[in-house]
Image (cartoon, rainbow, N blue to C red; front, top):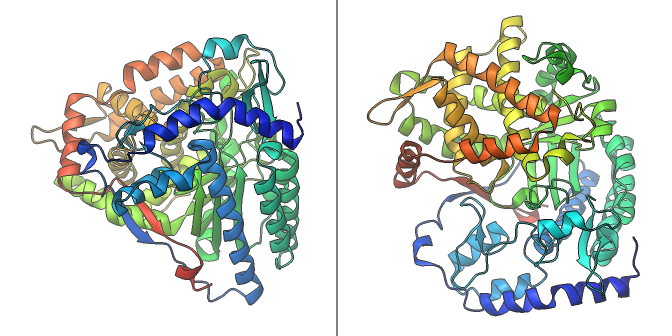
Length: 549
């Protein structure tokens, strides 16, 4: 259903007036809760730079414009996550460190601690963020009948009669959308790669129409562009009520040609690896697109959802299932951000929690590969349920993201093992990838229960523990059992692929309730990481000035 801009504004005002005024009143004090005094330094600050010397003046001008468009996407995500009173909220926080923490979290809720409030007198964060009316219940939503109910690119609001209806993003955010689209069109004029210029133009059109599939196909067709941008409403993680609605974000990227050339060979193995998955045939009947590619990038700007809380170090897109089946996906490895996390987080974790005899197995090569094959593994398995429940994403609702992340992690390890055996991977040994993965679990579990990645890691950690895939010494040091880890990887792969193929919402819900928890020993070990002042994640000093643009 489409609305005029004036009608949309009236509905917005009527819907949000009570919730926003209450929120504004409760946030005025903006005082940090005492228990949060020691969490303000959980992010390691990193300067986000890259070598741009090989780029032309036109390409540098284009980068500047893409950063400007990204800033608009950032503002839109603030509206979706918190509301439209960002400036008033931040200005009320007088302490600079607390204000910075709020900026990192895009609001007063700690994204790496289950979305708990860190400011006094703060209301609980709504599971549906600002995508839905604040007083909506699941029962009401599921019983209601209105257009675009499960839409990716619309907001659910009440009309003047109190009934639920939707407003398309292009209507609700028309001013910001039109400015962002115009900047992308301007950037296209500086593009020296015609396929990239075409993508920017089509993405601008997509923003104005809420029709993104054509621009996703255009993005898949780009092969030679040295600069890239991922921009728009993309991931649905912020919608924890249903996982239907997409949050705005952006990444501005510069391609590492040498590393990308090294990675290109792996995509060809996807169809063969799909056939070999450790699950019955009906759960692997789909054929992954063979036009997928792997590339390495230096990321020079994060905005919106990608910049909120924990930072993404690899991208697997598009999410559109039709595009995936026709073309596959593109996997973008963000090498400079990945290196920063390895140096500041992974190595200190290994020194604290991994048994001395296996610490040398924690390597950047394995960390890079585990991250890369996680993204590749999103293309394996099944996108549509086998029993007419629609797509896996629709059937599993708010659990879809966590289970998909768990699948990608576990199938990534399966792929690495297969490719090592085939001789396609020649660096390192299986123990490197397993032990580095184990250290990576400790890193990601610290992202908290509100994160899809965090939930997936908790489930996997507890499953591995039950299967004896690792042991923990009395002094809290972990050792991986290679044989038992391999068996656990295969059995967990089968479980996850079956749950997805069956669209088994209740089964996934029970799995998360039973295993998506941090037990006593793990909690004490994570506390040791805090005591050692090991950062939980990274945050950036970034922008045109840092890049010399």
